[in-house]
Image (cartoon, rainbow, N blue to C red; front, top):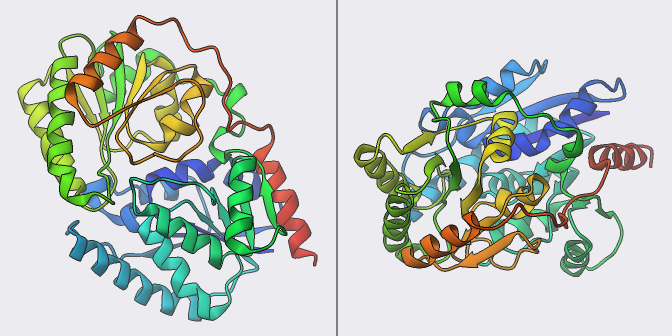
Length: 369
């Protein structure tokens, strides 16, 4: 079975890893990676090198991302991605192609596939993020796909509403959590040395722009800056950098300003990689920001999350997540309160055992139809 895997960012590739590891060892599958988006961007860590290091025989590279992250630049990137993928789908055929999540680049690659009848298997469909235009992209991808691997029963119901039928939609849990109970973090001293983190308590921080309320991002970035500047007086701040979203550069500017002013307390990481990121989560005191990993993964590491703003609004959450507005005082107050709390001991609503194995079983059944 010839399988294509669309990956446009460090984030989706990290989620794919448990599935890719099992696909690589199964002779039933011929795997080809289709890498594009920020993977080929020097400004975002040129993460294609991590894919190459994983030893795949075939890696297609499609470069279509504009440096400009204004609304006009994002639209230009979307259009270029569609054009490049029109040529790619014309010349490449697959039995199934995995696509994941809700990035605009992923949506563009999928839209280009529709006239070619590419059979798509969508992971993480049915979710809702009211503060991001990714909501639109995600549902577009769902409508173009033939198989749907969702992370909760509620999201399965949403996919069935969108598609108008209940066939080929499967609640398998969150793929990134596959094998999480057996996860062993890298040695703490090794992690700290590799990323120049001091051996003291730290908060793991990731902020992305809100791509629905674009005009407010400058103000939001300033609130982030003020909150982190104050929190740096109480705890070390380890920041993973924003994705290539509309006006992500506004947040990057404030983050770099903060680093210049508070070099000793602030650590910037362009790309941890999945194992290092999970290890950093394990060793952190809490998460702060508006990233989906705070919603989906943090509960499995027994970490509380200060979830800021509306980017993740609408997503199902476990009891470890506390929502606050983009207000420096609110962010600081909630963070300080969490630092006084005992470790989170609740469940993760996104966890199911054997997610990757379930997906493989289903696509084998699909392939035999």
